[in-house]
Image (cartoon, rainbow, N blue to C red; front, side, top):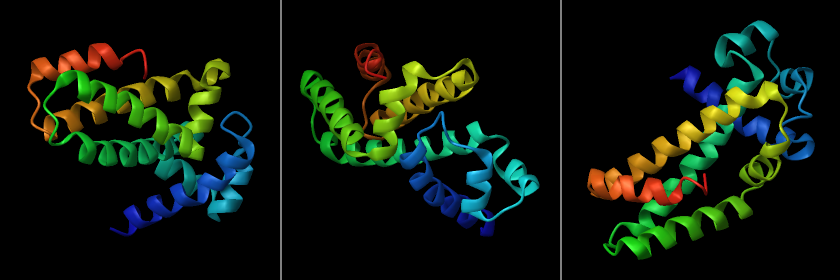
Length: 153
């Protein structure tokens, strides 16, 4: 349990660094100083800078999909749900500094960020699927939503 607390705190401590410097300009030394940990401990817990960035984006996306689940739970009209998902996701990203920076700059990421980009797409697809399944949508409905939302992700 101690590890989970450390990881959650590391994510919180990383957010101001990402807001100040962005993803591409973030330096390992700045992370180590902010987290007050050694390189060895950092790499043991996160594997790479991409690892902690992925966890941070995942943490923020999880909050987005938790709030979205509350908005669509009772809705059964697929077109309305689709609109709510797209609109809420956009509004959440626009108002979340970490997600806003990530999505606004990801097209300019260098090749070394490809694993991060792939992981974020996979994580968001998993969050979307989980949210829809939790709201009792069928696999056919989930496929419909994914097909229509893929361009947004």
